[in-house]
Image (cartoon, rainbow over all chains, first blue to last red; front, side, top):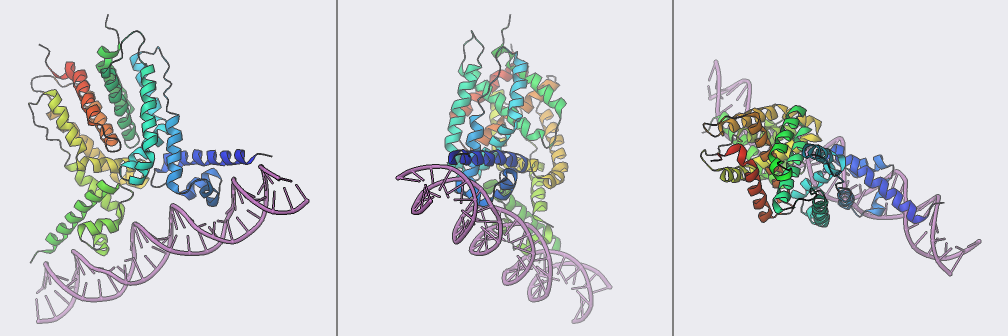
Length: 190
Length: 190
DNA sequence: AGACTTAGCGAGCATCCACTCGCTAAGTTA
DNA sequence: TAACTTAGCGAGTGGATGCTCGCTAAGTCT
């Protein structure tokens, strides 16, 4: 016999998982509560017991997804390998969902307001994770920080287009050029 | 007394202009035909005389917007100035609308199918425009092409976030770093 | 001028969707 | 065990939205 809290958290988790799936494959606007409930195996009434409205459900999903973004990039990789790893991370479902919601926030004032704390958390967290990624024994400057913003933003853009008009060869070539450009900043030049 | 064709093209133009405005401020999904008609000063019946369904209206808008993307970056600018110019271009309303629709296409199969030709056109066109941007008297290689993809994709990503959590100082610093990174590829090193 | 085609209108229709509400069942407290 | 609280259900509701259809007005052919 499960306790009430256990029941509760179990269904909430199922709902959040389901929302993640549905947002990923349908997008923010087309994520209906009916679809989420079907995916989660929960009734609509059950959903609204835990979330006051649809938006709350999506914001909760965003917060949970952002929390998992703590990039665990293994240390000691070469530059190109690190970039590949980062690309996979950016293309992962949680990250896609996160961006879907942040994008939607641009034209939805209420969503934007509710998402603000999660966004701040996200920036703090990724900032910290990225600092940990610094090559040991070399100074980590503002320019490194800026370079990483460039990389991440580039990868985000690439991921967006990759789904509509995929071109792996082009992506690979671009990644190599990116590694070349970053070389003087990140690698030893013996 | 205007001819029928003049009447027709006039209202179609008004509808497309209106769609551009509405998509920009509400996003793809929230762009209702009612809102477009109100903005254009056309009745809903009038709209559906020219477009079989909502999607057709949005696809037409996308095509028209993409056609105007032929980047007319003035030649002879320094690297940093060129980047600033490009950033303004990326942040312009037509480009924002274009990306809004391409993004939406990821999770909307029908939209994606209808948008495919415009997308191909777009890539052809921007490819040509970018080649024209090549510094005179220097060879234009695949690496330059790749570098430009990086720049444009970065700027797209930046523009997306800039609306939710603006930080002009950060953007400026990043742009300078970007210019530094691109320096060996684009500028003479005397 | 008269027959015909096309542009534009706007009330109305079918559908979908977020959310409500009264109910049962399950767990909790005394 | 008995009173109470909480989880979950699902039919029902109101509102929004894409689209239709019959109409009038305006332009086009002979």
